[in-house]
Length: 196
Image: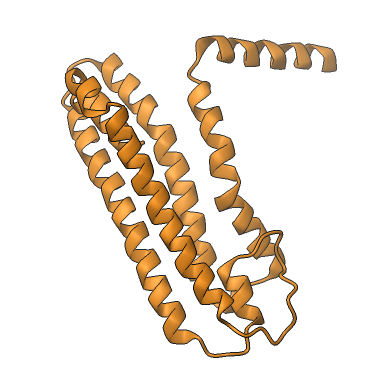
């Protein structure tokens, strides 16, 4: 998404040639491949752990920290290795996003038209908000001290980073649609009138 915004704003005349179907397929394959390898690494690491405290997880889906709580072995080195690889992968993606947006903001701030700057910022800021929400909640979930861990807090944080960004993303991008915006305003106005 960051690369798409970068090409659209910084190199608009080259958009079709730089972001063709081949480039999109390569980026999707890289994202899916790295995500799959990361998942396989964590799955293999956690399935190799002996569980001595039962097999009931306090979440609605299996997460590595929750499974580690059930383990009775000291898998420190294996988990540190998996964590280092995951952090490297996430840091690489995050660095790519940051560099793309630095270039975008440099290009936007050089635009002479305030309307052009507003349009560019309104295109980029929703994506940045979703990325920030996901990154901050993931960092909190995996790096918070065990002393503040509770099943309800873990559940809320897990929902925040796994369900909210995919659900909010289409809403943020569709709210720029004038017809949808008009429909939402009309609906809430009718609702408000009915309540009075």
